[in-house]
Length: 303
Image 1 (cartoon, rainbow, N blue to C red):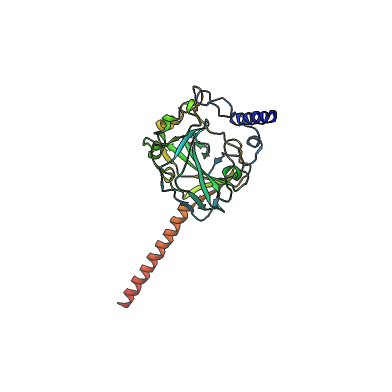
Image 2: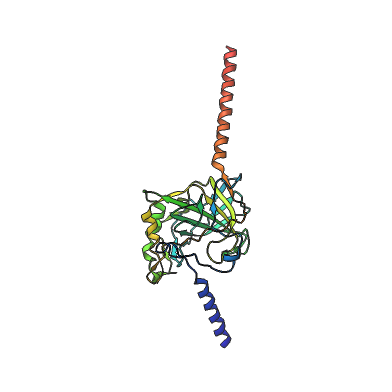
């Protein structure tokens, strides 16, 4: 009995320690330093997020990314305030990502948000970043997948400031009121509107990809990042709705992004499929015009 009590106590302490991490409130104190989270978060060499720069990236050519069931409306989604972000899960259909540089099929596990963005592009930080977290289907769960370098793929979507509200983000905001308060933390609620994950994703033709990590503890270096270069519009009023989430009694989560990590000479690849497709189309058009010209010349000669 005594041994059981000790085990339970240790488990409780471990869970408490796991939850004792957070973000500086940069809205009220811009000079507050980012905290050290310990372990691999501090010692790792492939940590995320990083600054993504167009000029310094390698240029890559891959097969197109393939999305299965992302256009299906999910009517049973659940959302939770976990004290660090808003997380959405409970998909009616299995959403699978493959193709590109991925060597396996990856299935969506959950979606969460960061305000402001974690990644920057050419040192520009955007007001919102959505992370669509995928697990490699060869691993039975996300915990095991986090132990392998090919275990997880995260699709990152950045949102730019606009005067036009984003309809997909609005669908999420409609249910925020039920989970904003600290008392509702870790209590899932049903998302009022059905949502297709496709609605959160702009064009996937151009993107950065690199080997990195989770951006929250344990910071496992098991992530293939795919960060789209095309951004989606969102209003500041919409972003401010997320900033009202409480992580503690009476304390709002004004920002939840991790500071930029060192690139450490990692290969960052910029995939520009749109330009390649455009070039192919132009080549085909040029060939068609050449054939038409040849036919016209032949017809003139025959006359």
